[in-house]
Amino acid sequence: MLRHVDIWRAIDLLAERHGFSPSGLARRAGLDPTAFNRSKRVARDGRPRWPTTESIAKILEATGASVTELVAAITAGDEPAMPFHRRIPVVGLAKAGIAGYFDDSGRPAGQSWDHLAFPDLGDPHLYAIEIAGDGLAPVCRPGDTIIVSPTANPRRGDRVVVKTTSGEVLARQLVRRNAWRVELLPLDLRGAPRALAGDEVVFIHRIVWIIQ
Picture 1: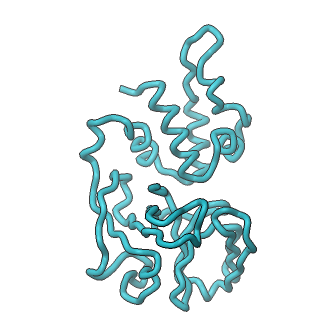
Picture 2 (picture 1 turned 180 degrees about the vertical axis):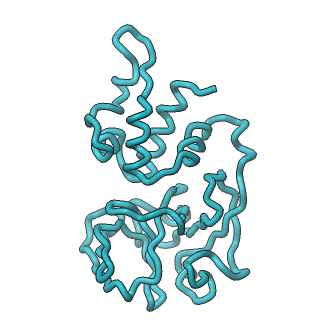
Picture 3 (picture 1 turned 120 degrees about the horizontal axis):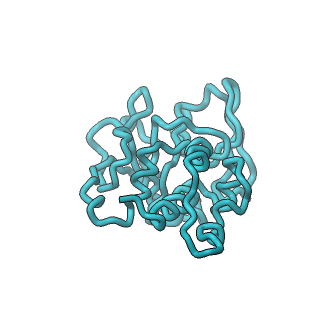
């Protein structure tokens, strides 16, 4: 059964996962910035106010999340949903650039990956990268794990993992991308931008979750 609290919790989870506050997500989706405020979740007479299907559709479009991902977020607090985990490959960030960890299509390959249990979001190609060191602080800290989808379409503003032809693996925010140039920002948006030539980039994969 769908519950009011679960729907709103899922919206909050999607917002956090994609680096937005609830008001930031509403703005990104083209809605009134106050649409997802907690004060708007209950009507003046005390009745629960539900998000519309149109607003949910706009959330999915704005974040690139799938319906399956939304359903997983809705059921995240329910015990019956917990068995729907599967093992996904995980590697340390420092090792991810070593040859043999990815195939020519940019998907995990070889036998050197460890594995971790993660809710099944319907993407069979998810993988994880474990963070070591403070290079991604304060967004990611040592021991955090980022969940990455090689099949999700990265869009401007998404957090992404980028591998270069030199073997460097970067976790950044995508500013813009075309056939000739890729522009990236640090995850905290405070450092200097970095530009890569299109032929320097092996793959760009979207970060769909951060485990902290």
